[in-house]
Image 1 (cartoon, rainbow, N blue to C red):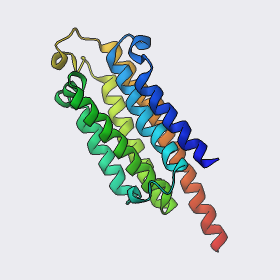
Image 2: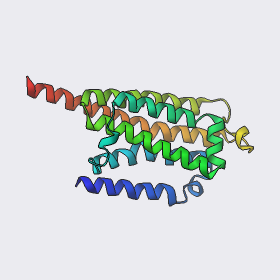
Image 3: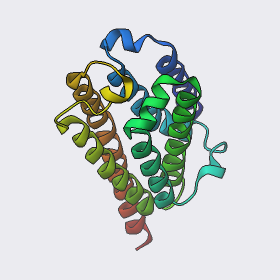
Image 4: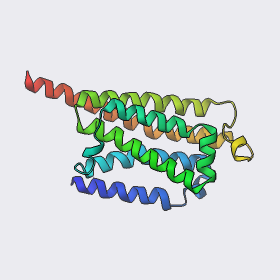
Amino acid sequence: MTRGLGYFGLGLLAALWFLPLSRWFGADFPHHMLRHMGLVAVVAPLLVLGFPKAVVPLALSPLLGAVAEFVVVWGWHLPALHGWARDSWLGLVLEQGSFGLAGLLVWAGCLRGDPLAGAGGLLLTTMHMTLLGALIILAPRDLYAEVHARAADLGAQQLGGLLMLGIGTPIYLVAGLALVGRALSDRREVA
């Protein structure tokens, strides 16, 4: 059963890379955000749950994983780095690779260690992802148009921010709360 989750995660990863998502959204930014959130919030936990032995080396401190994901996610959403990833194959590979590694660090650390520490890591990740998504949605102008030398598309940016909030926030929050419940249940059994 657990291996099935891992294979489903690999299939979803292939779909995120090979389906014509930009054609469906009509703009690059929502496509980017769907790929990004699918990778860190859906594919990464499926791989951790499906292939637990393979991710043991990545099961570091949940706080370290949350900080690594914070740096990666916020860094790649700076206009210059985002522009490099959009306009360069090398930039895109480095961006998506670092998203994938950061996602695996968060989920391996949070799901494979102490449940209460894992809950803290996931809830911290929820907070910074929610803040970034809200900033992207509420920005008064297209933050990336100038870097990409294209016409501003505030609506596409706002849709991307909504995808970030709609995918990441509930997944990290629910998983964090589930770990809190598991920690409380474990403590009741010990007492």
